[in-house]
Amino acid sequence: MTTDNRVALVTGAARGIGLAIAQRLSRDGLAVALADLDQDALDRAAATIDGPVATIRLDVTDRAAVIDAVARTEADLGGFDVMINNAGIAQVQPIADITEAEMDRIHAVNVKGVLWGIQAAAAQFKAKGRTGKIVSAASIAAHEGYAMLGAYCGTKFAVRALTQVAAKEFAAQGITVNAYCPGVVGTDMWTQIDARFAEVTGAKVGETFDAFVGGIALGRSQTAEDVARLVSYLASPDSDYMTGQCVIMDGGLVYR
Ligand SMILES: NC(=O)C1=CN([C@@H]2O[C@H](COP(=O)(O)OP(=O)(O)OC[C@H]3O[C@@H](n4cnc5c(N)ncnc54)[C@H](O)[C@@H]3O)[C@@H](O)[C@H]2O)C=CC1
Ligand SMILES: CC(=O)C(C)=O
Image 1 (cartoon, rainbow, N blue to C red):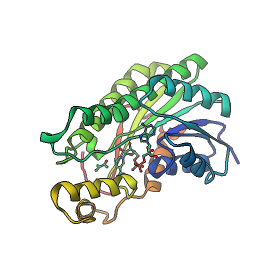
Image 2: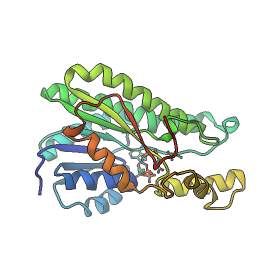
Image 3: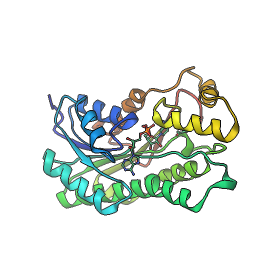
Image 4: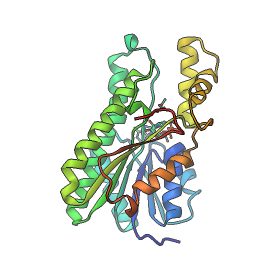
């Protein structure tokens, strides 16, 4: 049952943190558009949502497609108030070995994808004379560099910069721009990171994940639902006086 009357578009929503965010915003009463690369995965994700929902096949690296996704959200769900730039990819590679193609790919998804999302959302809010909320996925890797994650950290530091600049540029329009910085979340992304660490460093499978979790004060890895609770706040009117912030929620791992 929708009680909020607002509409959110969530990218990278077919699984993991994006899906948990979409499910949580739906429970909060928002209508949600789920966007991702694979229509079958989107259909399975949408089936887990009880309230008003739409799906959009989207590659966030394609600027025109992101603009179109915002327009489709408005057309299909009757509004557009919240943009969640969640889609992202990881890459494990020592600095010395990062290729130009690898750098271009991760930059296209994690940085350009977020920039296109910020642009498209702000333009739509302006065209409709609305205020709005833009919330993007950063990471603890936006606050600290991690060995083997150089390209990834670079993109997440960039998301932090874009968030601060966009917050200043769009404040007069009543648009808030913030980011969430999770720690170690047990999604497919971390399974891939851990497997790749094993390949590159000779660590046993599971060892890198366990080592990261070992540094967490609260003594456990983070769930996607933990992250969704923070995003729910950043997407809600309760955070109206917050903008330009990249909020760390990691169980006590990185202190800034
Ligand atoms: N898992 C973790 O520990 C952490 C994740 N994050 C960030 O949170 C976000 C979500 O991460 P997870 O759910 O863990 O990842 P995931 O790999 O489990 O899910 C990512 C989703 O994004 C989609 N995606 C990838 N490239 C896309 C593109 N070009 N266009 C549209 N969709 C695309 C994938 O298809 C997938 O459904 C990412 O931005 C990630 O960097 C930040 C901190 C920690
Ligand atoms: C996946 C991620 O954001 C890390 C390792 O901080």
